Image (cartoon, rainbow, N blue to C red; front, side):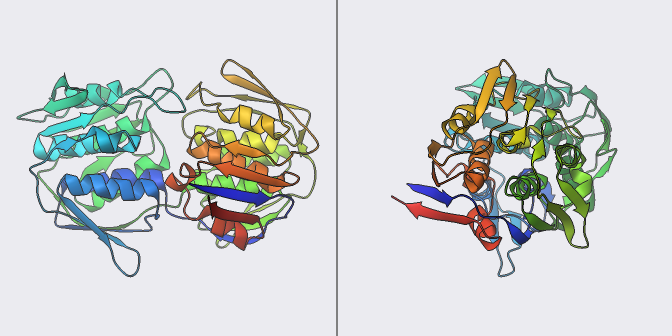
Length: 421
């Protein structure tokens, strides 16, 4: 079992390259199911989740491989299998995004129910409801959702949910509607940059999609899609994590490739706290050289503060002056990192979907356990500034969403090592 050993106290300085966005790459890879001919994707990060998606696509008849430049080539070779089995879906919830393209292209999709995870239950009823509106007959078979249709027709579809729009449901319905007869209008669609990137890829393949990036997306169905080349957008969550890394270590970093226009909510909160964030020629620069101010943060759907940066922001606010308040509106149970940060000397008190953060003068290194992807990143950030040595176990979580994070941090001056027992 691998773990991170971090000796805190080093100030980060230099430049870090931001990788391609995992949450954009995975649905675009799934969209290759729709495409006739070869799809070539550039800037796809080398992550555990990406490799898992390659395994799933392989079982669904899509061959994928990387060339010497790192570009990923995908081509459908067999359309017989339409079953995303539990063995894979249980390991990576994003596997559910094959549902829309399988249904649209092969008229049949059988996808294992993903169930809950460490950040709370995330049902897929919106995915199913949206595809039913396009003409799917749905059934539950041995724990799998089975969708079938002889004909797919455009429809008006509402995708609002109790915690806002669903990004993956929006992706599934957009992909499902690309080959439908007539026009589909999605209301309360997710506005995330990853949805925009997916739509831009599909349009390059011949789809007719407008409105991406707004709550209303319109898709006019086409008969077929052709292969294309596409470069995946930079990962705004990775960039936000390294912005917080610069802030928590009183560092000075340039994040090459980061797009500040994708991160206005986190930039706003960091500037309020006292961090200097500026656009640069290569991306974004982040600097901090003084004590930080307390702040209130509420996670919201894009363009609000992302839930995927909530844990990292909490680690930073542990060292701010005064009391900060963090409210989680997307996944109210996403607080398993609270107990681990408290082990390091933080003063955190959970009250329902809210955590009160009482700033402390320092954190203390300790052995801690990662519970999910973003909680892992929060513990790494805390370890960077903690006095002494921090050991983070179960780092396979972080490998799902951060490409060689220890190498990037080490290159900027951090004392972090990946070790094996």
